[in-house]
Image (cartoon, rainbow, N blue to C red; front, top):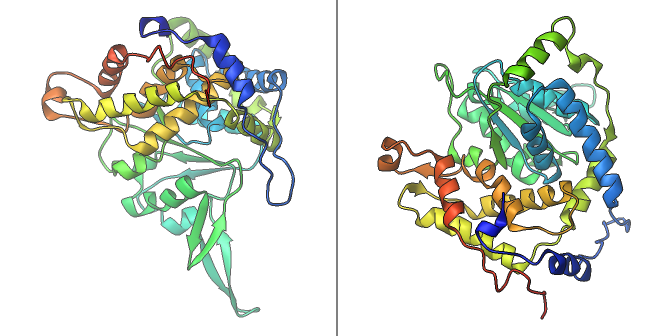
Length: 358
């Protein structure tokens, strides 16, 4: 997007600010500093991941980049679309590009919460209860057709997604890092499904729709996917430690006060909109800024521009807001409301190039 339609930011000064106020490298409890990547390493690793995904899924470069953005922003991804457009394939491809533990959960009406989180089993030989880990104990968890499980089973993911831990029988167990849930669902067939409640949808950083591929991409797919799935040839191109370093690098991306003000202004505009019954939550704004930082890093910058916020705003906010009945009957969609708010929201030009502490 072109930020000049809304105002101008002094990119050179923002770049200087990013260097001047770069956050310190916080030490972990064992005294070691978290690993970070230099720009060249970060670019090489991200390009390797995107190249593999684009090799398997034709014509969906934007969806691939957003999936990687969510991973690097420590979020979770909801892939919502009709059957057969590559929802699960995207999730599996992203998982296979990383040399880490991956699990897949096929959500069905008879799936129990203990199947997801784990269960304590009595060991007769030791005469003690032992915890058996569930499928959620992995770096990347693929939840296929998540809306086919009951609300009780869906709620088993709430603590996992928000706090990266599982509590069973009064004991808490930490999940591995990095940790990401990639869930899919079909919004068309509603028979035998349990729609995700707002609390569950708000846990997902972004929602994307795959959509149908263009003609050339579909022809290419018919030629490459007939005999053997390209997924079978995928090998990891980065390690879990590489991804952890990329995440630490994203966390160090600089965000100016003016960009924070712009983000908050966007959120408050959704709450004040007459076309919306429910606006963006404070948590959604925090995740919006995290996604913007990952977008900036993928574009080779160590500071965030309003364009980064605008680029991910629709994917991050649209599934969290609820239309007013009148707006819904008039043909508005959450996406169209977000786009109209972005078009009318000005950027504070005076604070756009401010220096922290000045």
